[in-house]
Image (cartoon, rainbow, N blue to C red; front, side, top):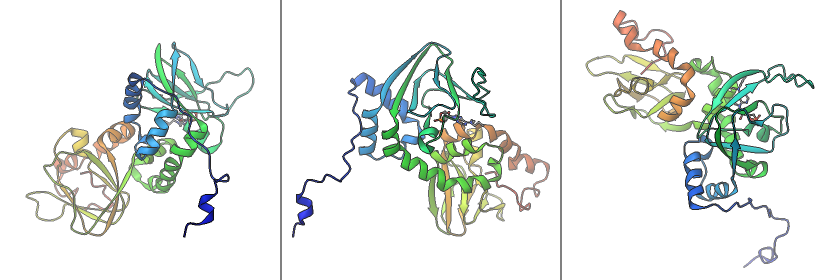
Length: 305
Ligand code: 1OR
């Protein structure tokens, strides 16, 4: 039978709807390009995606040196960059004394496809940084706090929390600041493999980078009889093909059930830039050229394949 409840117009139910800013085809086209490379938009379903696109407001920022966000302020909008470049300054002392215009240290730069302003909205915290345009023609898309929280945040929050503890334990990422690890979390995708599964195959083109969340794998190479390396939790692989733009240098096969966090080529280049030098130094082929046995089973070795 039909329950009486469903016949009563619901008043207690959530009546919130996202704001709608009509857009021309040309605007929509530009907007779609701007968000296409942004990891926060990657995990939305079609419905969420169209709600967010319609709620984003175009915001031209005229001139160099225009301040978009001031550290310490209350958060109102989240921004996606369509055009232009922005510097991020963090005043670590939190020194917001009147008269002391200490913008602090320049910590980062954000360009087209990037975004900023999510932290204050996520944590109901003051703005963590000051953001200033460095080019003369800039276009941002702004999303109001409520729509951000209702649609974009849940996903983002969950992912950041889910990967936070794990990424903190990954050696190769230890030189990054927590915020850089959060950005990596935004872009990660977890995959499961079973014993015997081939995760990457020697000779194939390389599109992804992997970090082991749990389980074990072996690295094998054509013409090398024994497994050349064993990988476990916190180890990474798949970076060489991306660093060198070369085919996969070895095959990686699961030997237990595995959970693996993976990052696409684009994310790898954009988010792991600061640690790729360390990865290059760990390149097993550099080790091999000195002593072919040195990389095989060396204790705690990170399999750099
Ligand atoms: P918000 O709402 O706090 C400022 O407003 C925004 O700057 C912030 O969200 C982030 O989107 C962005 N630390 C804090 N915020 C940063 C950082 C950052 N980089 C960009 N934002 N870094 C840590 C510095 C110790 C920089 C890491 C490279």
